[in-house]
Image (cartoon, rainbow, N blue to C red; front, top):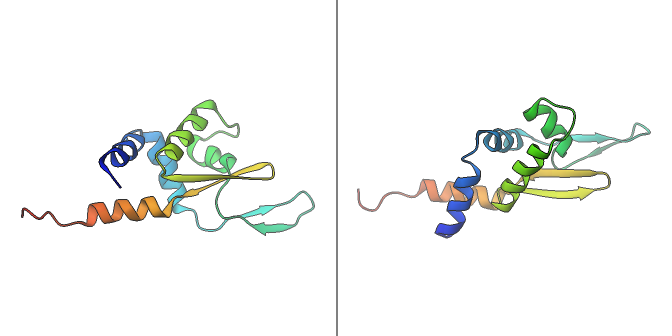
Length: 110
């Protein structure tokens, strides 16, 4: 992870709404989707609609939420994948591990 990558990540996390979206996604485990006929299937992440309800307090996906998700995705902090009618979102664990490594490094000057 170079300086430019870190700057993009920190800029993306500089917005309180994006931090709330990121924290919401970090707290998600393994939700399920219920189909029209009652079938249940595992989903590897929440849908954009679930994020909207939980973070924005709205049942309708706003252009504001779409913008925040785009910024987080462009910073490589989250993943988004279309599955049928849904966009499934999740944390990019490689980027999160890179940040943990970055913050876990000792300062060689001290």
